[in-house]
Amino acid sequence: MIEVVWDDKSDFNFDDKLGRGKEKVDRFTKLIAIYENPDLDFISNRAEYDDPPGDAYEYLISNFSKDSGKSKGNFFTPSEISRIMAKVIGITSETKRGQTIYDPTGGSGSLILKGANADPNALTIYLQEKDNTTKGHLKWMGVVV
Image 1 (cartoon, rainbow, N blue to C red):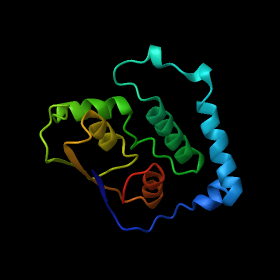
Image 2: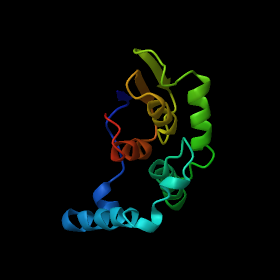
Image 3: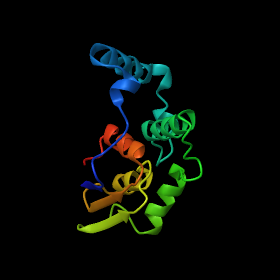
Image 4: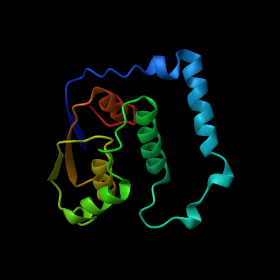
């Protein structure tokens, strides 16, 4: 279970950024269709811990921040580092039930997601994030609030 600790005052307006109604649905439909292209199926070339959708999300979130004039480049943790950190703190498929993780500077959620990927059933994960835009991004990617 992923529990996010924050107030619910995100300043990210999805309608302004993504459109409304049919326009928003069409935009997401086209985006998803890109990933349905058989030429983009690299499953046979993947390493054990590859996460193409997660990597694509992290790439887009870091570039969105740069393009909006609010660069998070100095604070963004690459997925490889998050994966290593999850291993260093002992999150594996053998992790006992009831273990908790707390990330006081949640950012893109990369660390908690790598931890959850290592063993999604055993962990309770707490995340705190100050930046309202980042909170909106986490909600958009499905982190339960």
